[in-house]
Length: 597
Image 1: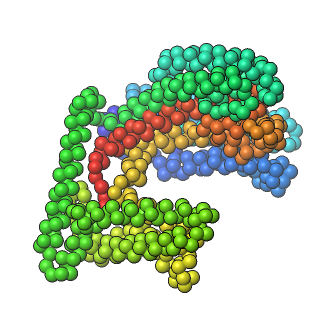
Image 2 (image 1 turned 90 degrees about the vertical axis):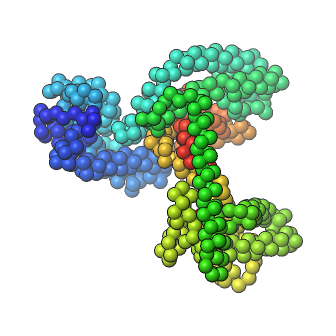
Image 3 (image 1 turned 90 degrees about the horizontal axis):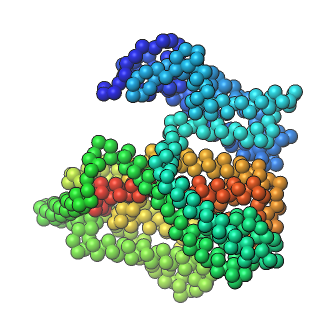
């Protein structure tokens, strides 16, 4: 195939290790089949990823008193640590030995030669350094003590570096690096403006609030006011009730500037990742199409979709007209109406949406104390429920009956045939939604023997399944599924980066704040809110999403909070770009198609 590089290997043993560890980027197809144990390679990677996940989980659990040092779990965790380090050490030396088989993906040249090449790999390759960092703390801690090999809190926290080993396949960190290099000059300029305004705003807040006793000295210095000013730039006002009038005026200006300013880096990262997503999805297509050409293309696609739907409608009506006998004609007519064709079909669609809307409204009102205790409303709710159950039951039976007469929206061919087709529909997504829209009512009434179960909490929740019936008309979840299918590589990579940053910042905040008391906005003292990793993960998640429920942090915690804001902006912008490209591409490809079955 094009771009394949066939080379001889200086060391067959290192080639075997190289294949297992997947250091090669391009190999001859026959060589893969004949010589490469890729099944074992996948299993080896699976073991590594499983151990990484276990290590992260045990680190989190060890911060809880139930699983901490001196408990029955401690020995098991130490054994897991020993096994993990042993496996990771073996992997490191295997990669060190096999690196001479790694080649440049473009030229096919060997990247590392001989013993000197192996040491070059160990000293310069990012993932080699990461592999070393994943095991080195264990051996350092082992050398520092005589008998007890349980790592200290800090060294054990370094196990989070093992999470980055999973990036070998996703390679998401390098994508972030490429994006930062691309928009680096604009980020520097934007950051300069932001830092200048941040300092000026912090100084203004200091002069406005330095003598405010209600703040408890939190803004008695410019460094002290800088952290709370950063929160205000993010739109969070932890101390808003204690500000003076001049302070509130300055805070308003800060909030307005923050809303405008942070849209710039979000837009930069969004645009960069939009281009990255577009480059992956549109590879091989013409990238020079102008806006006018795209508009013409979209219009042609829409006209094509409308023509297909009109042809399907005419085909369905022709089936009604040519049906022999009342049975076949009734079945074809039911299929025509349930396909949302004609006045009756559209009217039935609107009726369905109205009944679903009434179901949602009555469910919401019934959850309130006033609605649940009102007998008139309870009677009205029962009437609506009975109407919905009757109509939706008739609809479900008719769909199962006439589904074999339905046509595929794209091909115009029949989707289901005879009994097998009916069973396929029953266990399809919409078939299960239609069944679950009525089945809970009949089960509840048959068990209880009365209709009082309509207002039970379980029935209220199950009735909301009917909202999914609207998917036949709107195709919203279908659009999300298409976006996921087209952008899943980048979205999975972004999810991985989010999890890594979340765990890393949670660990750092735990180390910085585990012995520190904090104060909530209402001046309630919270005793050690970062006492364990689970609590730290919760508060860190709130911080990453722009929420600051705690008012006081240590100096280290405040610095980490500022960095969290910066990374959160990058991730928000990246996700916005990927989703924007995904939705644009999905809409262009799906057009106005609606799957009514």
